[in-house]
Image (cartoon, rainbow over all chains, first blue to last red; front, side, top):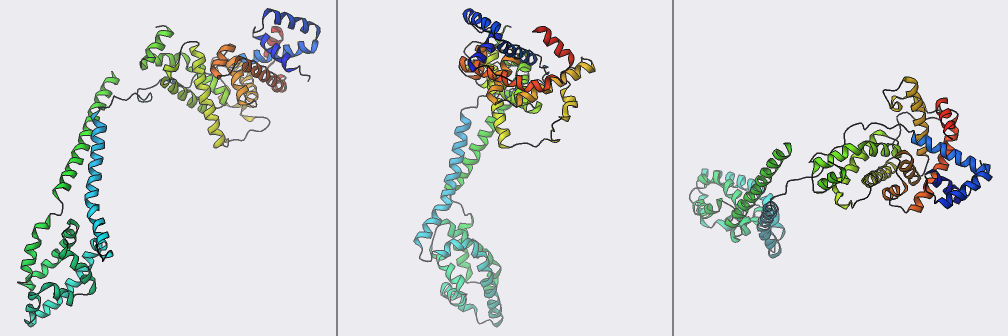
Amino acid sequence: MTTPSDRDLERISASLDGQLSPEEAARLEQRLAADPQLRQTRDELLRTRSLLRRAPVRRAPRNFTLTPRMAGLRPPQPRLVPVFSWASAAAVLALLVTFAAPLVGQFSSSSMAAAPLAAPLAAPAATLAPVADNSAATGLGSAAATQPPVLTGTQPPVLTGTQPPVLAGTQPPAETETGPQIMLMSVPQAATAEPTAPSLGQPNGPRQAKQAPVAFPFSPLQVALFIAALLLATAALVLRGLRLRAFARRTKD
Amino acid sequence: MDEPALIRSAQGGDLEAFNRLVLAYQEALFNTALRILGDEDQAADATQEAFLSAFRSLNGYRGGSFRAWLLRTVTNACYDELRRKKRRPTTPLEPEGEDEEELESPRWLADPNASPEEQLDQAELEHALQHCLENLPEDFRTVVVLADIQGLDYTEVAVATRKPLGTVKSRLARARLRLRDCLQGFWELLPAAFRLEEERSL
């Protein structure tokens, strides 16, 4: 099939849509009258266009109207919501810092660097065995009724002397350091030591009394931060919920 | 309410006003998408996407043919859809052979009021057109769909495609020529009624 030049093709196509100036149209008409090939192209393009115009129009399969939700219409959020949210997040972060800072400090300052960090995990396990040994020993000791003085006299030297090295490693920092996490570490020990206390008798009395105040292991700052984070997050959620409910009621009407 | 007033209200955030415009134009947008994409589900997705994007960018409309402006959003949505399709090509459930078995599919039977013969005629024509349209480069296809199927004038097509008038003219001419060549093969297969009518119109 012969094809006219691009220019001719564009002219013929534009003439079908009445897009030629009167002069251009007149010139094209002259050429069409003289050139049967050009005329044929014009006729075929016209036929093609009229077929395209007959393309069946499909009905839309559904309505494409938008719901407020789809349109992204959200209720204007109360300004306090992001403020509360961020403040709550900041409080949580600060809380984490209060827990992490002493650990880091201890890690860098302690010469027995690994022990304190491993302690929270190791402590319960570590304390169980020695205490069991200890109670077994004291059981025997109390049965023999000769051992108690050994335990009552000087607790730390006796412990380090008789306990396995694991406890010897963990015990001294617990006794000497005063950070909150150290208190945490010493709590399980105190708890596990309790059942054996009666059999140990007198000697453990002063030690327990000394550790009693640390039963609540969080500082006032930590408690305050925790409460603040909780309150701020709740306030943000409540504010947002109220606004959403009002918006849903309004858009339903 | 007239169209400019509805547009102004919609620009002010009135969703109900916008939805009235949606109802007025959804058929044009859906059919444009259908001819460009050749798939009903994808066309519906593109139409929905186009109306969403139109609502969001309604303040960017600064007068002129609203239809052309809307058709631009659907054209863009179709290009996105085509790009997605290229990234994840889907395998048709029944591979199309040369004889195009799906011609018999009810998907082609558009007008339920037409007689069975008319429906089949329409189906054959639609099938032939769709087949040939899909063989065109995307830019050509868009221009010819907007001009010859949607009946937009050159200026509107230029708005809808964001192309200069000269480009529109040239693409339309080439697209028509390619379609002529493609439809030539179908011409003898098309129902006699079409041919007689077309011959008379020449």
